[in-house]
Image 1 (cartoon, rainbow, N blue to C red):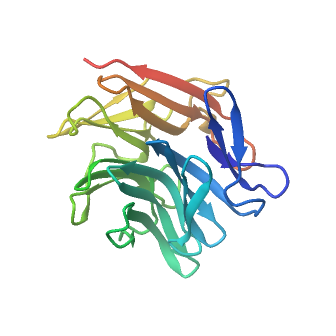
Image 2: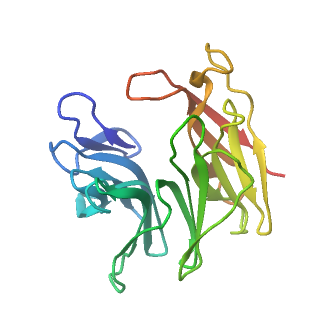
Image 3: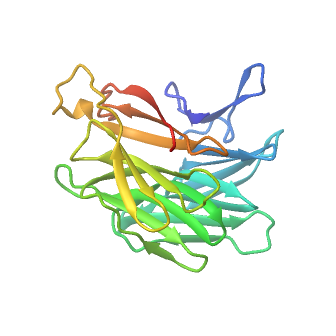
Length: 276
């Protein structure tokens, strides 16, 4: 579990469950201005992604302590929203920019054996942000997010694919909306699922599915709150999904509500999708 404390200087924290109890850790000590957004774990180690005073951050937990903390990724306004580690490859995604340049999707890649140079890249999509990443292999990586824009309900979905040599943008059947999470189910790495919100159906969680050939979309149930159906408090604000290993079942989580820094309320939800 990751985040930042909202009392005092708001230092970043991570909480670890050892089977009996939770213990809290602060990878950056009491320094403020840091936030951890995502975590992934394998082989008794964990990797965290977030943002700091001078850009995106990546930190590694070796089972005893934090080490190999990387800071300043993507420049002064850089932030990392999601991280994935598999087969010795670390990928993290978010957004980059500074006061004099438009924001764009940020990708950070590192071979954990140190045999390849660390690489960070800002993709050429102005105002783009990536919020989820999943990798099948070093030559098959998916990242999702959206492009910011000005005006009401004008966010554009963003799906990117890495083929081992370059990133390319993938078109999906969605007019306006945000994509948040990505994963694959079963043994077929081409069976890719993406979670998010379609702003034409804002009160339902969106699922995009790629079967290796084409995209389709479906929706979860209506998620009503005390607000009216048209109220922004009924919008799916965040979402993510995870497959049950060895099956085609998906668990999905998210929240409904504006979710702004002004303190607007959010209501959490959990969905389960059984495979065929």
